Image (cartoon, rainbow over all chains, first blue to last red; front, side, top):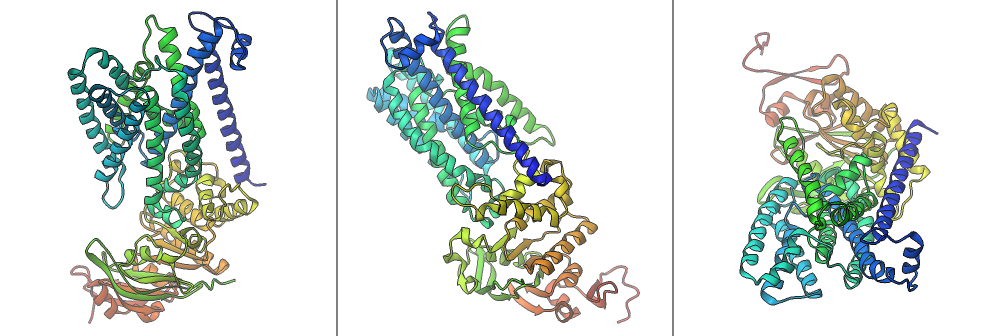
Length: 338
Length: 270
């Protein structure tokens, strides 16, 4: 009908094709992760394992080791991707992801204390990690509160708290026995090496609850992005919406951290990559898929492609750190934005 | 179809923390007219507008939309009647004009709302009225200040409200763009009967474009009425603390304020 309609149709088409490509990338990475390892299994063997048939060798390697690992990689990637992008959009700042503003450190610190001093194992560590993440998020949020939440203030407070928590983690590591320290180290780097089926149900259930809410709140976030006054004028109460977003994003970060540790920079990278692919509005699905692809790709790279095996958090850290440096350099330049 | 929605404040007192900015102020906005609120810096005129837009909660008193307190109505319902152009809205990075304007449709969409033909028409009309239809798929970041202000006005128009509040819509614009924006708002008022309420800094443009002028001093209403009655040298002295002479604007026939300063006022024969 009009130029405006044609332009929107074109954008929708582009949006859809980007999402299709992202889904294909994720599926391809899943397939590669499942089939390649010390032994390579073909598609038919993998499908039979997934269908529950007994395939000698593959049933164990693929069914018990690779499949839960790949599923957890995908789920935590989705969770980190959504959480990071929600925070970044809400605070209008690419630095505002939960791993930068201390929330992941909150999970790690409480988990490490639980392991080191209370001998926590299994689900108890996960619960400790979730409590830690939520506590730190609320602490940062309320310390930053001055009638409303300003992005830069919240980020600086978050970084400061994160640094303090990192010191706590270091201190705990020097105090506890070596075998416990090995378990605790996972909570600093982020690793999928001990992933097993038991980790899947709590993660999957949490995502089944939180992801639909994230989709629902994304429409309101689109309005909140226009500024508090415009948002209120359009019928979206800014502070209430922000609190809801914080709860969802922190919940996602914490459950993902509980499953695999704070996989560095996934939350930080997924949103900006999605925004680069879809300028002018990413929604929730794109950062979720980018996050999933990042963790799957990084884990496969760390475990298979490099001469020695590295935990997934090391690989994402190596990718993410230069981007963080670039972002900081750009925002310090006169006329630069952050 | 002139708007008949009534907007009024009933003895509102508004402030920030313990500092009261608007004192016990009651105004009634004439429906279907262009109202302009004027006053010196920090007199409470923006605060008054923000309280009408429910951005600030009155410490006492109420803002009444169709006789009912807006605080007691669902905010999204209010958003279908009452639109606002804030002073400094922010555009998400990379967003294109049509998408941004489309966000003005938010209050009209259902929970799983798909983009409807109504939405399409409202956005198209808003783009046409503001003369930015040909910018529809341009990123907002690339536009000039004047164009960007039209985009924000278009967003408020797409919201299709009967009442439109604007907080200094002409700030940061050069004089030709100021006139353009005010003409546009007058078109909107004449063609659609939209009730327009705005805060303006420029007293002369206010006098020219207002059907009804509110002069605010120290958080209280000083005077109100058509600009020919309100704009007097006494009012300017009392509200703005400035000597002036009032002449008739040859172009519009409305009062024109000539400030008397300490310099360059030699022609003045009192």
